[in-house]
Amino acid sequence: MRQTNLSVFVPHSGCPHICSFCDQRTISSHISPITPDELRQLLTAQQPVLQKNNTSAQIAFFGGSFTAIDRGYMISLLEVAKEFLQKYPEQYTSLRCSTRPDCIDKEVLSVLRSYGMRSIELGAQSMNDEVLAANNRGHTAEDVRKAARLIKAEGFELGLQMMTGLYKDKPEYCISTAEEFIALGCDTVRIYPTVILKGTGLYRLQQAGEYRSFDFETTIDLCAELLKMFDRAGIPVIRLGLHAEKSVKENMTGGVFHPALREICESRMFLSELIENMPTAGKYIVYTDKSNISKVTGHGKANKTALKERGITFDIKEEAGTRLRVKRI
Ligand code: SF4
Image (cartoon, rainbow, N blue to C red):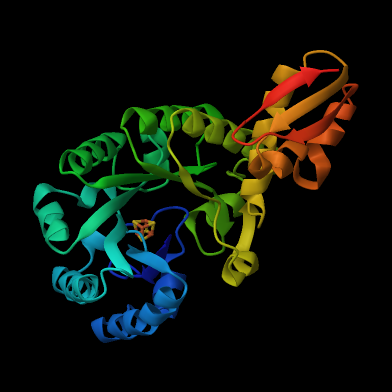
């Protein structure tokens, strides 16, 4: 049976923070919070679709701050979700939510557990206090550590989300953030390169000439390295980059957004490994699993082209289960 997330967006209209990258005012004014009745309608409508497609879903409350919304409202949504977990256990298996690191304590975790919550994602964004303060996050790296440890200790699956290229950020801070994520034993990761949106604090800094975020090439190299780190640690990166939404394209004034961002970063990750394994000019055979062939070739054959400039050519041979094996011919 296939697995998916059924996303329910819960905008945090009462959020006391004004994070530098967040266009919360736009979100809050355009999306009204889902009501329990609307959630019931959504889950009722999706159940036969999931059944027909032989798919089970985690009901995922996204929007950033699920445990910080009005408690009565949060419970009203959880009650509907639990009703569907009990009624259709084949289609609805568990719950997932994302929230702020400073909105987690034992009490709220026990409430979430009683409704069937299995996975909790924290919007950590960075493990550098200077970056967190400069972007008005309103929490520290220590808040992330404490919340992450508590979530793990209470038996939930832990997801951590990070951004790259925020105000005052540096690639080395992002690498340190990834190292800390790995040390915290997270189960999943999401990586979001910063996108500067009109109306945000980052936009004002950009207009004032004080901020530019990382450029495209820096972001690709950095995210390729982050993918490699999480891959070696056995931690799945379940998202890289924002979804291709019309509002992002319309309101973006800087930062990095590309619909094929993950594919490009994965290709770059393989390029660095190919270079390591092909130290001198010549002709090689690269053995790899079918699922990696396009990544080895590179987005738009970018890796073949880059290596050709070094006097290196290669053919690819499919080898089930192999990540990368190189033979000189
Ligand atoms: S990103 Fe920041 S400002 Fe936006 S909803 Fe989350 S906590 Fe609030």
